[in-house]
Amino acid sequence: MILYHGSTAYHVLCCIVHKLFYYRNMKAVLMITEYMAPKDELNKFINDIKERGWFEDIFIVPESEFRRKAGNKLTERSDTEEIEGVVNKLNDILLEWYPAGFRQFDDAYIAADQWTVGTYYLSNKIPYYYFEDASGLLGDEKRYLKLMKESTPQNYILCEYLQAAGRNRIVKGKLCDMNNLPEGFYDEKAIDFSIYKTMCQMDRDTRMQIVSLYGGEMVPMPEYKATTVFLTQYYNNLKIREVGIQKKMTKLIIDYFAENSNLIIKPHPKDRYIPYEEIFPGCTVIKRSIPSEILPFMLPKAADEVITPNSTSIGGMRNCCQKVYLFGEEIEVHYERLHLYYAASKIIEAIYSGQELCYPNANSLFLNNFLDKLDINISYDNCSSNKIWLDAGEGYKLLEKDSESFSKEDTIIFLEVEEHYTLFWNEWINRENMIQLIVEVDDERGCREHVIWFYSKDKELREKVINMSFERELKNTGANIGLSAMEVTENMILEGKLEAMRYAMQTKENESNDRVLHQAAEIIEKYEEEKWRTEKVLMREGILPM
Image 1 (spheres, rainbow, N blue to C red):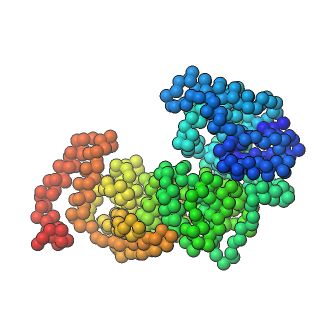
Image 2: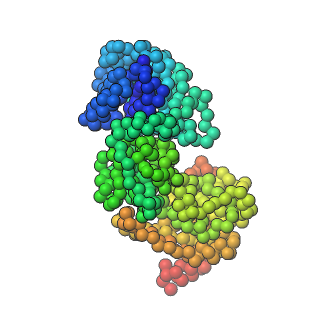
Image 3: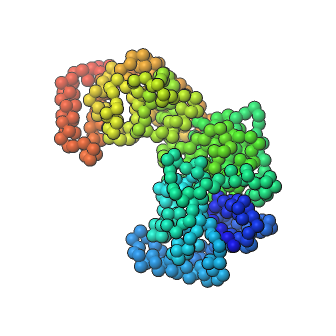
């Protein structure tokens, strides 16, 4: 007999698909933690599985009751004796709940092995197979552990102590979607298991039984219009845990990447608070309870795009679309930086002619998504000798880590995301080769400006940029974005150097105090020497009276 265990809709789908494909005629027990869905939904779902006769028995694991009975709440300061005490209590409580015991099973396939069933196997050194937590997530252990620590701190303590998450040496194999693992990832215990590929190998009747279990139905897709599938996230899993932030982030991403698309929205199973049908009239909203991995079998053809802010489910969707847009963790906090990256991609569109594009200090996901959306084909073969550097301005000094490969003949697009003006710390910056671009955003919060600095010794490129301007309406967000360019004055350069100096003096670990003070002295001296010139510039610009 086989034991299967899971705590999310994805885990249970893995259990069902694996059982029906590999152990169709063998007895099996399925255990699901109570947190997978609200009580009524979960009970109905389990009854639906039972009616199909796939499992000998199905149990809801009452984790909240187990943890309450176990007593002690663990923290990162808990010592070995305290942790062992909790583990032993949980083991006793588990066996009291399931007296048949776990040694009766020939094999066990366990997802979320930091919960009580998993900790029992680990603490008793009973070998088992491990299901990764989401498609391809085995290759991003750091992110998985971070999510666990934030959502279930006690589980994280037990996970680290017992080396759960498939890391313990007693694990016999790790079932994962190997097509979605990061390039270069290797684990000698990895076993390829893809929901999509496995379901494609099933007979049609079994495949459709699985789809119908979740209430899946064919989704209409018009021939004349591009289709975008959007995978949402549960606001409580975001860094800023506010429904309002999730709503704004979703609107902005759809405005930039799914404008005028036939929109299909697949909410996270716990995403219950946003009325997507009202926000995006005409969109199709898939039932929350349907795992996204089922969607490929509900679409009559491949979608044009699948978009998600940072959902772990994106890996399972690569088989049913032409393009995938993932934005990573930064979108959860800095989604408004999309405005700057959109403007930067428009600048690259205007000046690109075979140069190598370098962006070691910028968000590569944001940038590459926009470059792809705008059909800007960046080739890294047979590049010209000069480069275009995109820098987000978050570090202390531009290109600090890449100084050897940087040439002053290169072009720089500098996004002033934190107003530290670190570009101006470079001594070779001058007015003649600089252009200031203003990205103006007008939305419900009012009108505000963001700055992009453009540096190049190439006069032809500077002429292209100085003549740039655009306006765009973002309908769902209710915002307008515009770009304008202007020449840089000497006063701008001096003010920029002063701001960079202030920031440098606050980050002593990046530069010695002597260097900072020396630079400060030079700037002050320059101000004194050219005071008359500075005042003249300020008067001409209307900052000082004539």
